[in-house]
Length: 296
Picture 1 (cartoon, rainbow, N blue to C red):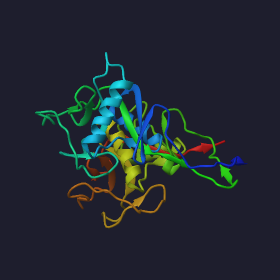
Picture 2 (picture 1 turned 180 degrees about the vertical axis):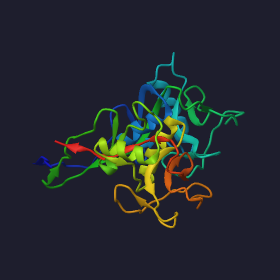
Picture 3 (picture 1 turned 90 degrees about the vertical axis):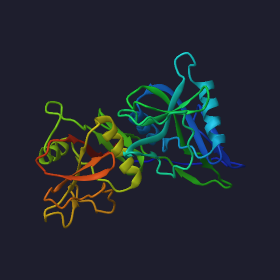
């Protein structure tokens, strides 16, 4: 590993900064992206900048984001944009992708519609009301992330991170310094657990292991895209009395779905929208690989 260490110049005051095209409110930066994309891909982009799709907890912030979105997005083509509300993680309950309490709503009359296929929330730039939408629709979006504080009163060394990179088709996730991707096989698409594992190993990684809420939300975003279960590297060799990760990392986080594990000799585990589910290892599901990012 190589890192560049330089000495910072003397800074006379604390400076709070946000990314370009952002508005700062309280301790957060709200960054507006006008590159239209689906809900799950929008969440991935937000996580790459250290945040999540925006969660809203009061009427002032709701109106602020609506009005700022109206200024920043193309009014002729964009009348609403993605925020972080979805009912895909714990159906049918609506939650924020950042895991915060769902303590404020501003649904349009008749929303959210209780019909299949409208599982993600968009905020209107016209009246500030929410509507449940098809998660695959391409929309602009707003991310929320902590504002960056830089403060020094005496010269001190600053270590800059290494450059990182991932293979084509993989997404970098800073908290784990890992790359995630290839949730399908180029030829067979669906695979039994062992074949999925071997595929990931050939890619230089392993089936994905999950060690935090944030990483779990990242994996769930792939579930949103696949609209189906995705194999995890979690498995049991003793009739589900205990589980282990195929990459050998410690089992320090789980998110079992309702009535899971089922204890029915289904010894391999997949991620669904509502958490971990056990499956027979010969079931055919999508694949998600995880491998360490390389630095230079």
